[in-house]
Structures are given as structure tokens and as C-alpha cells.
Amino acid sequence: MMSTDSSSLTVAGLEVDVDFKDIKNMHLSVYPPAGRVRVAAPRRATEEAIRLAVIERLPWIKRQRQQFQSANRQTERNMVSGETHYVWGNRYLLDVSQSSGSFRVETKGGTLWVMTPEGTDAGGRYAALDRWYRRELKATVPALLEKWQPILEVEVDNVIVRRMKTKWGTCITRSRTVWLNPELAKKDPRCLEYIVVHELAHLRVRGHGEKFVALMDQVLADWRGRRDQLNEAPLSHEKWADKA
Image (cartoon, rainbow, N blue to C red; front, side, top):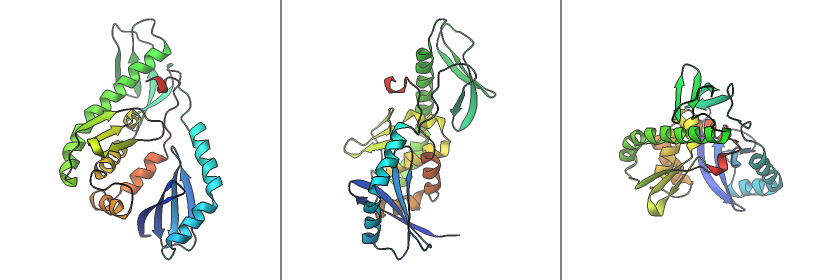
């Protein structure tokens, strides 16, 4: 098995993840959805060499990031029956054929039922589903905090579910507040756990340098795999998302 050590650099205002591996040549990649930059470097590579490689490829990096921001999102959803939607990493077919006196969302078998009052338009159905995703996320987070806060020896004062265009989560250290993207309720639960641990770790260590990486390695050994799984999944592209 190839062994890996990680660190982080800031180059021309970009935060760059660096993985040192038993390889001969340096490889640079840009990942969706936000255009995270990662360098796989030989163990002998110096920081100066890595910085130079990033600077030389800045025009390409910027083009990749622009493409992700404009194009790499899920196919637009119109909130009609038969569409594919995801809940906790599982695929469901949407069914909006049933009306109800109130807004209801539930999963049964392979179907995601969104029931709304008669006459509700697609935007109203989206809003009902978005509220449900938020409730799902909020209901799942307390158990993760109960598990991980003692391990990391930190405690948050507030958790906010907030839609973000380019981030899955963020930590406001001065107010000890963690923001989580409601899109996480669509992804594998392991991804949500990774984001929670990642943001809690920032209450111990700011930035993504060696100390932060060492802490993540200590408490969540497979965090890189979870990170890559999540970052390879696009954010949603519903036409109503920016209004939610």
C-alpha cells in the first residue's frame, strides 16, 4: 500500500492540499465543486518546487475553477414525477402525484413522495423538499456532536444549516458556530460525519496545515477517502436553490 503524508500551502491566494507519496513525478489536480487544488508530490519534492509548479499552472487552474462554478452541477431538476433524487446517498424516484392538505415528504421503497396542497407549483414542491432535507440534517447532527465533541475536546455553541454555493461546511471559530450545507442530507452519511469532524477540528486548529492534518489523521483515519467521495459529488442545480 502506498503511504501518504499531507500538508497544506497557500500559493497566490489559493489553498493547496499537498499529498507526499512514493511517486516519481508531481501531479496537480483541481476538484469540484469548489475547485479544490491538490498536488500529489514525490517525498523528495521541496516546498519551493511545489509552489513553482502551482504558479506555472495558475491559468489552467483558474480555467478549471471557472468551469466548475458555471457547469459542474447536477442536472437541473423540475420537481416532476420520475426524476431521480438522493437521500443519504440512496437513489429515489420522485413522485408528486398525490396531493395533501399539508406539506409532507417521505421515502417508501424506492420512491420519494412529495405531497403538497392541490395547486402547488414546482417551486413550492422544491421548497417543501428543501425544508425536509434541512430537518433530516438537523435531526442527524446531534448524535454526531455527542460522539465527536468529547473526542476532539471541543464544544460548538451553534449549528446552522445554510445553503452555500461552493462549500459543504464552514466553522466560524470566534462564535464557535458550524454551518452545514443542506445538500449533505443527499450524500452518504459518512460524508456528513467527515464534514462535522473537519469543522470541529477547526476549533482546535485553524487552517489546513500540518497540525490540522495530523489531528484529522489521529481521529478519523479514512478522512481523505470521505473527502474525495464528497468533493467528487456535485452540488445541486435546482433553479430555486438560490432562493431557499
